[in-house]
Amino acid sequence: MTKKVLWCVAVMTWSSMNVALAEDKVTVGLTADLFSKYVWRGQDIVDNWVLQPSAGIGYRGFTGTIWGNMDLTGEVVGEGQFNEIDLSLDYSHKFPGQDLLGYSVGVIHYDFVNTHFAATDEVYGALTTSVPLSPVLRWYYDFDEIKGSYIQLSVGHTIEKLQQWRDDCYCSVQVGASVAYGTAGYNEGYFGVDEGAFNDLTLSAGLPFCLGKWTIKPSIAYSMMLDDDIRAATRKSDNLWGGLSASVSF
Image 1: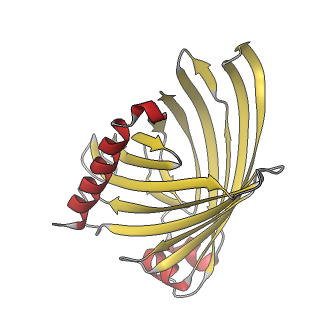
Image 2 (image 1 turned 30 degrees about the vertical axis):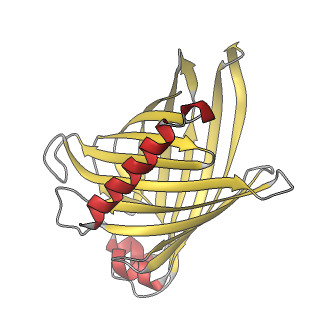
């Protein structure tokens, strides 16, 4: 069996197991994001409108997710075709005996469908904090095609209940920023730059609000590549994009 088939079997098996345990508070989430372009880690992947649907199921700290990017205008693949489908499995929890420090570990399979790019796989770990600005340190390691690491530090702040209609329905403001470093293997694989260097700085803002059981979030983001050699190797080293997200969980 191919790695793609094994991943699908693993996620479907895990999901089916959790559905059978519905009495143990399994959560299911659905999201649809419409963005003016697809930017990943500062890289301009699709320079036009995209639709990014996803579905996830969680149980006792585990979350399995399937996510896709659909090229709506035919920028890189056929119009209305997917150019990427990702499968991920995550486990997140707090460290015992306290409430300020948590962690996440997981694995991601990237399948670049309808393109000539080979599929690849990453493992990751993260340290999360419940202090002002909620800093998070994430480490991703591609052990398959790239064999390199991407290390990201992010901060964010939410102004809760800017406007409230009922206890469970309100509008908030979210702002965030991140900076990331790529090792020599990562930068060589993606940019042909054989040295470790800072990759991207990304800024974002969103305005989530409720609409019935759904959460709607208009957002805007800006990213720039930081290293001169990496900037020269990317087709667009500075990107501004926005869009609208709709999500529901039950």
